[in-house]
Amino acid sequence: MQFKDIIGQRVLINQITQIIDSGRIPHSQLLLGSNGYGTLALALAYAQYLNCEHRQHYAVSDPEHELIADSCGECPSCKKMQALVHADLHLVFPTAVPKGSSAEKMCAKMYMEEFITHAAKTHLYTTYEDWIAVQCSDKKQGIIRETDAANIVQTLSMTTYESKYKVLVIWMPEKMNPAAANEVLKTLEEPTKNTVILMVSDNSDNMLSTILSRAQLIRVPRIADEDLIKAVASKIDIAGQEQALASAAEGDYIRAIKYMDDSNVERKYAGMFVEWMRKLFKLNMVPLAAWVDSIHSMSRDEQTQFLRYAQDAIRACFLKTAAGIVLAHRIQFGDAKFDDRFPYMISPNNIENINAAFDEAIMAINRNGYDKLVFMRLSFVLSSLLKKA
Ligand SMILES: [Zn+2]
Image (tube, rainbow, N blue to C red; front, side):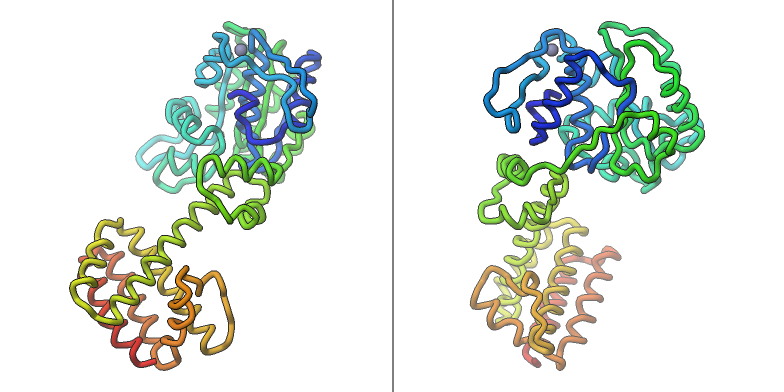
């Protein structure tokens, strides 16, 4: 990871490279901030710069927005750092114990390959929850354990292999169990020469105060809106949604991507909902059957999500017509004529039965009922209920 690939954070990066260049490198540091601010990416870019054989320095006119230095990205050290396979780079992160595995020997080392793949896929903008979901499908807690601590102690006792600095990156140190934390504490107290420990945390509340007090704190700020919008726009079309995106994401890139995914799904569901309601209201069998066929290609999870979306939308329509409460984001389907008229098809006369029909359909889908039949049946029921408003 080079600093140039990090989203925004130019001021902080320029401070970091200046300190590294000065040679006054703290033994242990804690990068504190939301994962979506790029904390893990910063730590790995830090490690790469530290051991780069040809650090680059640039003459810039605007150091608030431009980098004054970066690793070269080309030397053997950079190449290995980029692939996270450098012999002097050590990574520790939480792991969960999958069903049937033993907790005793479980440690980050066992999942290094999976972690490297996940890191490459996410460009190091990832959360604890996302990583644990990849590492262990059993919804267990991820922990940094005694085995990890023993590995850390052993690693730090060895000399460097190929570079000047040995770098230990501990991601989510707040997930260390107390035994591991006590073991790690000793290594923080007795720094070994040319070893740099970078801890990356998004919540210092759960961390032992003794660990906090032994590390130099680097507060990673939120990403500036301008940088965040530019980064998201380079991946997804966000035309017209820039301001909404910036206020929802609060400087967090992971949250920004999630917001765009959610809003794209909502728009897709809204379009499907309008089409469905029109077809079932007219009860033209051929187009309705074609629509149900298109639903069949979705996964069960998506079918349930769509049904929940439709149920929520109908409840919001009822709130508007019965109580005058307007949840705008729930009753705007992207079709002005439909937005105007459809809410009046929901009234106290049919809302309860419509709600019950959705509950029944969602239950049937979750119980592996035949999806085409479930949607067809629901369409008939809704068609007759909507006419009773
Ligand atoms: Zn290099």
